[in-house]
Image 1 (cartoon, rainbow, N blue to C red):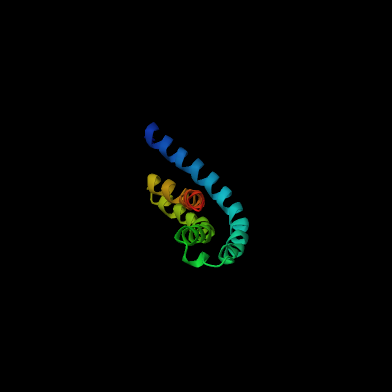
Image 2 (cartoon, rainbow, N blue to C red):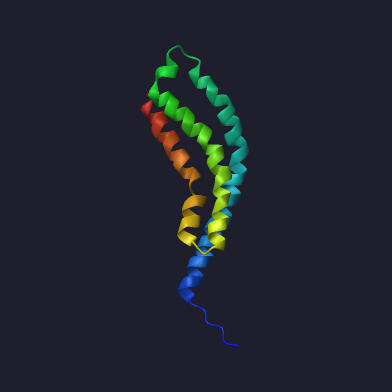
Amino acid sequence: MEAVTNPKAYSKHKGALITLIIATVVFALAVTPGVYVAMMSVMLFDAPGSTENASILNFFYAIVSFPIMCILSNVSWIFYAFKLYKTAIFISLSPLLSLLAMAMFFSAMF
């Protein structure tokens, strides 16, 4: 039996595996606080006229999308199984886009 291993392919596989494991654990732990923050985010609309403010609306949608993105990031394991490592890493880190949007829209409110 002759085993042919490509060291470059193995390093991609190993790096993607480590990234997916860390991202899965971190975002799985972030789902519960994210859901509570999303439930409280309706308080953004307490002030009169806040429903017409586009930055508050965008901030609200970014907050609500975070727990959803955390749950959907687990789909990355399907792409990993099909050896689409770059796609798997991108999807597993997609909740970071929600965090970036939150920071961007929060700074736009002031």
